[in-house]
Image (cartoon, rainbow, N blue to C red; front, top):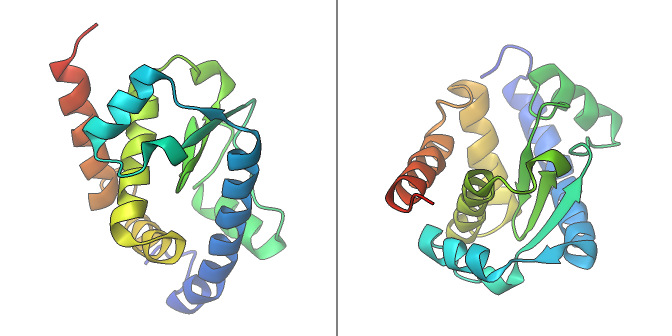
Length: 160
């Protein structure tokens, strides 16, 4: 476990992270854009079961949670920072505005959507993904590696 987050803190923070993720997904689904035809095809290639549910919201900076404990943990672990380019919250994906036309980044984030679907939602996804990042490190975490490799395969096989 990351020395800054104890297993007990992780268990306390996980429900807060799930709640925040669900509320942000609702915001993105309400105000985000549907996938273009090319992105829908990419989502299918990645293995997203319900690509028509995905929405993208372009923002100047990926938001950080308001909850003080969650915000502190996010900053301490550097999970989210001004450098974060994208964040997938199941069917809602934040994309930093300056990355709007970065196909590989969108494909990467869609890979996380497929993982959310496979694992069954916020709690199982965040439990595994955050635990891996805290114990193994980002980007060495297996779930992150899976998406990095998938993105490379798709983008490598379809040069434009």
